Image (cartoon, rainbow, N blue to C red; front, side, top):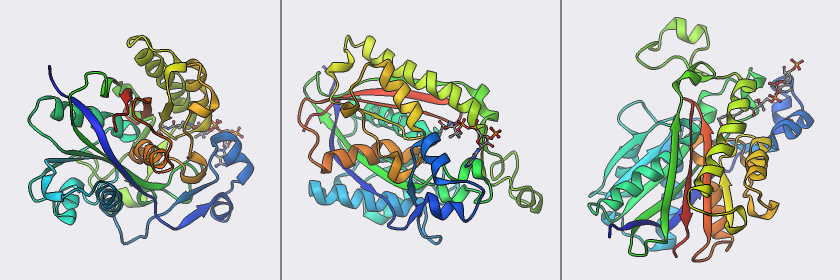
Length: 330
Ligand code: UT7
């Protein structure tokens, strides 16, 4: 029997600097009431200008290593889900690998936007299931403030900076660990949520800067319509195909983009409010960071016990979306 990948450690990092809705009111024509009622967000964290996404990944891993007493030399692989790498290359995972002294690990970045953590978790779990690797770090981290236009009220109120990480190791129990995953993409969504410049199509130039093409752009209403159905679809699908009902779940840990999207998915899964993990009011949308950050907060508050069933779900640019079913094993 092939090994399962079990989550044996977690960590997270949110920068100390808080930007409230009232702070944003001073920058663009918006107000706290609009932001809270439409999204659920009250404040978000902003990382220092001179620090990159790798800094947050490293801090999250330090928290995990302290809790687990983990020797970085034992780590085999580091997968980093992000859309805001420190640099396009070298990868953020290589920077993290050096910073934590994981001298025996290889590192790779993965871009699936807001679904990045679910995709990376599945990738990491597959590495473990092959039997080839024993300790894989899966990081979700984004410094969204680095690509936000603080003159565009349609986007700058939504996002924040943050990171989380899980450690995957092999387990023998076929009923524990990463049990199932549903991943989907639909490239026809590419014009609804994107950053236009900085890649090979539109390399940086005076023109791309003048036209503000290095910022995130979102057609919020269209993305909302897709997100609200697609995230609910995969959340329901993963329950159905594993013969699980909502009441069997300890927690639903969704991507934190909009409280209304989360509530729609939770309703479809017939969940009680206490089963749904929400921290969007404090962090906003940290893209690949949301799910591992929320999971880690639940873990460190003592909310998880061995045997708990969890579903992670996300929707993001691409479009990409997906869900994962995990039985907590430690
Ligand atoms: O994580 C990746 C995936 N992303 C998502 O899942 C996000 C999906 N989209 C959303 O969450 C929502 O569409 C938003 C929160 C972005 C917007 O909420 P909405 O209810 O869809 O609002 P809207 O875009 O339809 O705008 C409604 C009104 C508009 O004014 P009019 O045309 O009705 O006069 C906007 O101009 O609200 C206005 N508006 C704002 N007003 C105050 C848009 N942004 C703001 C703002 N403050 N920040």
